[in-house]
Image 1: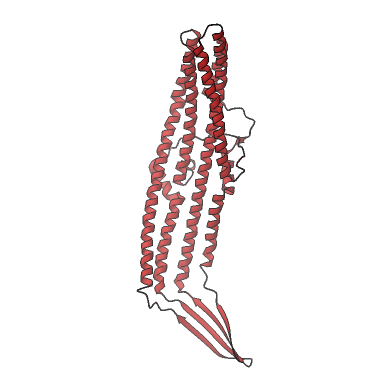
Image 2: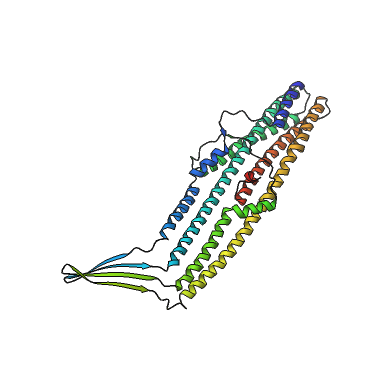
Length: 408
């Protein structure tokens, strides 16, 4: 009987130390495939991309003058033909075109920001799914162990070599573990539903088992991350484009002091003969500048001040998000290393020691159960630290606006 216990515990120890992958007939879930799919199918990304494409198309229309007006006037046996063309002051078209181009760049960065936001949500869902599968795998190992121990404790109690407390404690721990499996199964369905929503799939669809998540060490310093953020963060760049748009609008407002032109050509036809050809040139005069142009310039300058303040506030918030995310990355990195290098080896050694003491009748059954529970809990915490680290890296990449692993 003791030999059976030892074999069971050795199997458990090897499984917990090596973190063996659970044999599963479901195909493995590839993160990169999910990211490629979400870029193409997510409705929020598609909507933001459409806004960017619309803004791009608007650039060309700003470069052209208004359509000419052709008129025909009938007076008895005489007809008057006319062509009228309105022309803005030469610098106005280029300024408006610059405004449209800047706006398109703003929408492009908003599109990139939305894409990064959705990608980070997919990564978090992937990490949660990874954690749930590892929890299920670990608890299933614990259930197998507890079932074996419940059987052994029951046999020993039947022959008077164990007390009823051992049997009841094993039964309680087994019931808790089996309930945890049911709870993890429900959590998995919720996470899968969230991923299906992001991927625009059937909400009831199931996913395979995630691969081991990347938990590579982040070596970039805070100053390097700040520089990358200022260069690449699409949300920050979008506010920079808003600032540039405000500067262009100040220029547009000031150009309202400049005249616009009207060219008109008329030709008279009488008795099938063209006579009385005329040309006319006109231009606008900003006579009411004190109540119109002056106020427009003042409004645009106030908008420019607001844009500068908004940009500064956004930069402060983004850099704060970078700092917070980097602190979380470092904390989870330390926690992950602590469990892998210290806590789990100690819990493993403690379980071996408890087994030896139990075989020698120097420790009770409850102590052995507690040692097993500590090892299982340590592995669960290690897997949580892995998932939290991966999630924190995703938050950091979203805050910085670039794939950090490519910049190390």
